[in-house]
Image 1 (cartoon, rainbow, N blue to C red):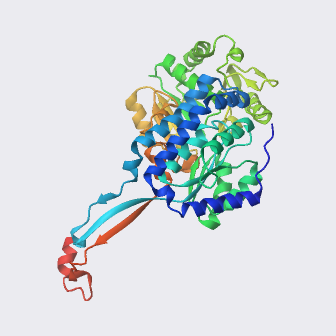
Image 2 (cartoon, rainbow, N blue to C red):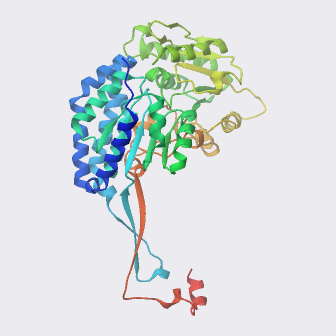
Image 3 (cartoon, rainbow, N blue to C red):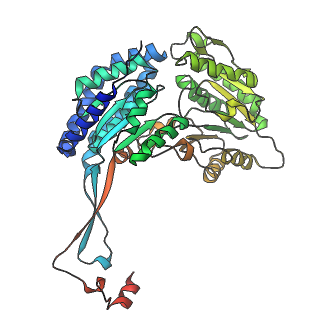
Length: 465
């Protein structure tokens, strides 16, 4: 199935109509926002099976995994916004210093306006619709651009959104990078982009002439740190789960392992056992194991097999785009599998074995010598984990776990440095599409003279400030 590009003239017309609709102030009404959130929730419920079916078609994603990692997360975001949007949107009273006697201070939450949301193919429902929840809650209009690499999902989302919303409010456009290039040069009030750091640079460059604000949710090399004191069986199981979720095609998937030499062999054995527990003896026959999204992705990831020694796995089948989860040992530091984001089920192992230095010091030096990752995972004594957290930087972090920080809506999700800018989920999603406007309301009855020239009370005021 191939999607047709939305014509440039139509892209321009959609943005113009959304800007015009935003100026009617309809979206500023909190009751309107709640009504639209309910419409999105109803659409998700009505089209749930359709979305699950196309996720299977494009990614071989089982209903269970589709529900847990995509559909349920979006519906949870909607319900959370419905409960809290009235409070989020309320004007905030702030403290006013005595030097502003007679004045009151506020923060007013106003929607940014017309938003563009561009999503990738790996979680094509969640990563497109979760930001949409924030846009609706904040009172914005939105143009949604799904990935063309999952055409059946993209078409199903377009059908669902069209059934629930007018195009002047929420619209879906389709196409390849030519369409993206045109969209990024349009004057949106916010671009919310999820994808690779390389593509994000293109987005930022295109948006710069209009000074369009950006939220960039990217990726990177997320390390798994395994200390000598780790519970190896538990660590292996949680890493195996995190790496095989969506066949490693996850922005926060474990990307490589930094391990203490004393526990490396035990980890490999435990990883083998964990795989059999999670996926059975024949992982290819497991309906819960996802395939690579394209032949190009399959070729790229299987190419990493030449860069190290296979400690576990290594089998593949091009006809199904199937790649077995694989541990690679003996990888050169400059190999592609250790310098680029893998986005597949390969997991290189780096042994830190300098006997003259502590394991945590070696870990910190290795991590901070590279770009800041979207996630960092540590297994071992929690006190050592907190020390590593203190001395490194990442978008998010789990101590003795992987992936699960994304499941807590109370925690912000986003990157830092090369792994992104801005954050979302729950209230953070609302804030991402909101301008916090400072307002000072001053009394006309009081008019303190110290603010005016020739500053007669300067000595007193200086002491007060």
